[in-house]
Length: 302
Image 1 (cartoon, rainbow, N blue to C red):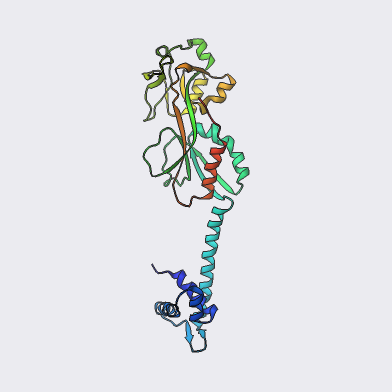
Image 2 (tube, rainbow, N blue to C red; image 1 turned 180 degrees about the vertical axis):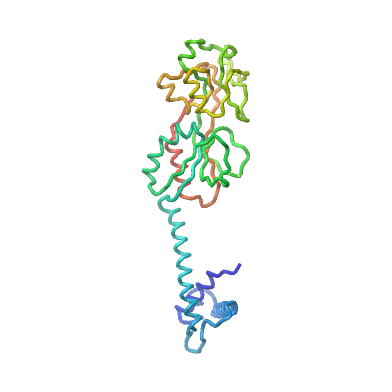
């Protein structure tokens, strides 16, 4: 493809400097290179832009028209680059599309939104909460927050939180059904499970005496597709649930839920990642949002 902007810049320089030799010295090329480019430009346009003489260059009427348009076009290019590069180097700005699971979004991101917006008032946050898997490119999403192990993907990922998992139940449920003392006791309890594809009916455990890790199947009469629903049903006393700490820590602190079989907890972690389309020049608003989450999210320990 022809470098039209480069041709325009050399043409304008020749006009402003009053000749090919002066333009060549300023641009670091030979006078003949400037002359050849102008000739090639005239051939393509099918008209003469200069009247050449031994004293100076004089623009033709067509040259005057081309000069005015060329100056405006290069000014527009410069303004476009300033608008984009300036936003990247200076204050983050523009619309930021963020997707997160319902449970994580409601419990972790939404409470942080006022702080983020106060820090970056020129960012327009477009937040969508859904437990469905999206394609970032097709959905025009800048950042997707997802929990669990990562699959093979061309996306970049930054780990923003590690959330220990635990088994919890409402005090009312335990009062009616008893508190399990060993994993074998779960056979007599309603264990809430997930129905999405990567889930299993096995819960992992650790032998407190030997440290051996093992798992056993659990059962119950209810399956759901997201952690927010499971937490709500667990609060309502429907059964026991195994959830990440970020789901339930406020409920534990308030006494609405109780941790059970904690001495058998295997210590596994639910990793939370920010996924984004990687690029050498990441938009400032994207980088600012991810950095903010890493800074603001709580440290959750086993």
